Length: 74
Image (cartoon, rainbow, N blue to C red; front, side):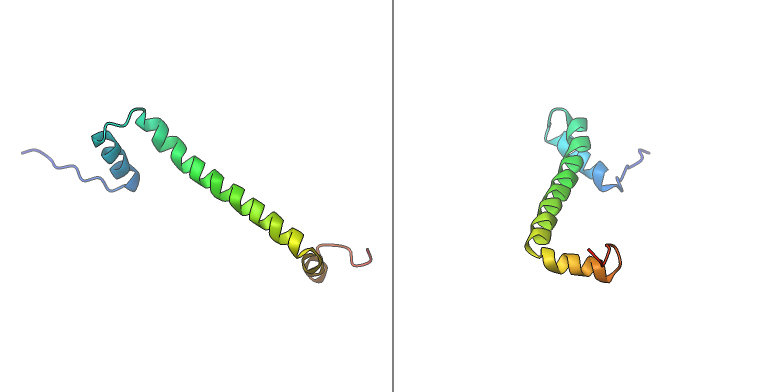
């Protein structure tokens, strides 16, 4: 009797789908695609925070003084 293998990992399922589609260099896609997505997310978040802080700089500086992260006498 032959054993039936049921993949439980989402990554394994994705890998099997890519193999069925005959995509070349599957390990590179599997390794670098999540890294690219995470890097892009943090890049967008960094730019967004920079814009928000630049726009509301006075409020941000007051907030930092209120919580004690900057000197109040400056």
